[in-house]
Amino acid sequence: MTDTGSVTSYAEFEPEAPRGWSPFAVALIATLVLLLGLGGAIFGIYVANKPEAAGPPTTVPQAFPTSTPSPAADATPTASPPTDTFGLPNLAGVNFQDARRQVRELKLGWALVFEGDTGDMTVRTTTPAAGSRVRKGTAIKIYVNGPAPLATVPGIVGLTCAQAASIIVEQGLYPDYETVRSGVVLGQSPRSDEPQTLHWNDRVKIRCGPQISPSPAA
Image 1 (cartoon, rainbow, N blue to C red):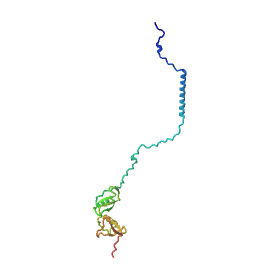
Image 2: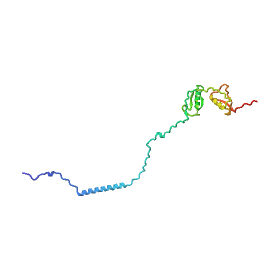
Image 3: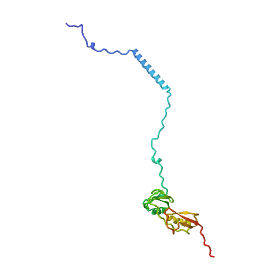
Image 4: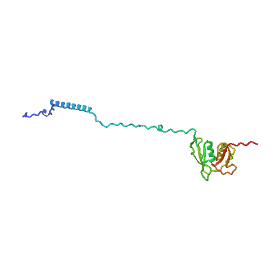
């Protein structure tokens, strides 16, 4: 016998279809979205128009040069030596008379300084030093290792004072004028015929004056 009271069909096991949103819920959500959008717009306008708070003044840092000046622009140009100067030759080891001759040929002044009681007659050094830039007329000190040697006193009576002075200096002595420096030499001390006692750098006394004309014959 067939049982027809409890027939189970496939449709009873299918999942139930989902229910849709109700019109009221949709309207409520739309209203909330509209309100949120309106509130955001109002807040944006407020922030855009809000005045900024006063703050400390902004200091713009001073710009510093980023390039280093060229050394050539700041360097002091090296001055060229004057054209009328020349280098003093090295006289060390030269006999003092030869050294004096070289200095005189260069049109320089000189002063001999004898430094010792013993030693040779060579030059130790000069002031200015060798190689220094000098010009005509510059006085050079010549330092000699040994003592001053004896000098020869020339006979100068009757010569002009200028001639006598030149000859005295040539012999390594200095003129010592008792009166004027013009005219002719009327006398000298010591005389050339006396024993030689003067050394280089010593002085010869000379007396200058007008030349005396001889008296006419009676």
